[in-house]
Length: 467
Ligand SMILES: Nc1nc2c(ncn2[C@@H]2O[C@H](COP(=O)(O)OP(=O)(O)OP(=O)(O)O)[C@@H](O)[C@H]2O)c(=O)[nH]1
Ligand SMILES: [Mg+2]
Image 1 (cartoon, rainbow, N blue to C red):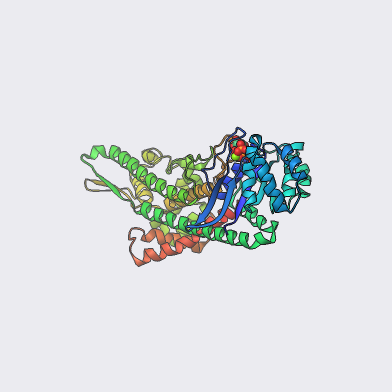
Image 2 (cartoon, rainbow, N blue to C red):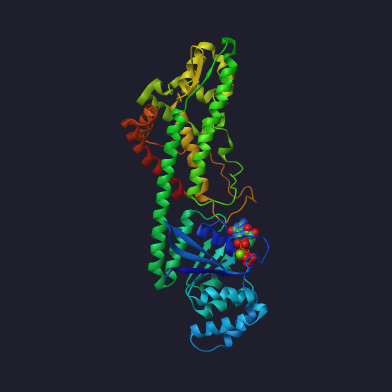
């Protein structure tokens, strides 16, 4: 039988938000107005076309004191009393929502009772908790910590501890993958019958998460392959047009790389079932920066240590010679591809052309001007770091969250460079990948791509297990 879990509680406390996050389903209706959910709706979690578990969204209790008063008068086994109560609520218009929320319980669903930890418990909450206790089904309480308020947590915990098998703090708008798994694991402890069921559910979700991580690594590796070997050219009609042609070509190159990146990020997003809502990046995310901006390269490009290590592995051919390092960091070389003439202009034409060709692969042969394949391995690291930032955002953006009403709530001010601690052997793998990228079908490239993916998986795993 498919395990079913009903999410119940007082109106407007975050039931639908909790469900949305647990089921990874952003089609759940969430609203600031109480009474948004008026009938039960089931949200199955399906993995590989198999329904694993079903969460049921319910309306809030409508008239708990009347329901409790009735329940106390009923006699018989707990099953019999529940059915009598259901009949009673079904016969009264004023109890239509209480009737709705009792339905899944009468089918054998386990219960998650959601309370809002930002306010104190009141009499009406005690009535609700008492109804649930008397019904006697496996149950867990979730304190949905809507705000930063923690004054009432201890009181809530005391009130809940005497009536529930398990209590969890859970923020429906911030919960990470780890917290979601933690809650599902705890659900297994509410009842012996649920233990086996929930451990299977959790195992399947973990495996599914691993396959998302593997797929993400593959998406990133394909992005790197395509971007690094991207090559575009234009014809130079007159020597005097060179500056203009360079700038235009640089702009077209940037656009192409951005397009490849956007498509890869879209594929990463699709892994995480963020379907309906237009996600917003946190206001301070480094991803708001252009790929070829100074800030991006400063934070996400190669670190000094990497420059030195890579210099040792591959030397000047990688575009990471030591004076390039000094230039890259010191002069804001990448303010924009189009400003190559700016920062580099100061160097004099000869030197400037050297840098352009070694870093970006810009060259002029006869009447033809060409950019790409990328001249510097630094672009590879920029793209990896940006993809990892995007992944972090997608993997941790809970489905119950619908906007950034509080701009500081999910600050992603970090300009973390996730590759900065890669070991020399990991850098060597990136180096081999870069050196063979213009021959994507070659054995050498396939082998290095095969080695790069596990390195990426390790970085991805670190990101979600750290958060
Ligand atoms: N900041 C924040 N807001 C939350 C959280 N959970 C719920 N909310 C907000 O609280 C309001 C009610 O959330 P819902 O999830 O619709 O609550 P509900 O209990 O399903 O409400 P009804 O269906 O009307 O009974 C919405 O405006 C949510 O955005 C949370 O964890 N953090
Ligand atoms: Mg609701």
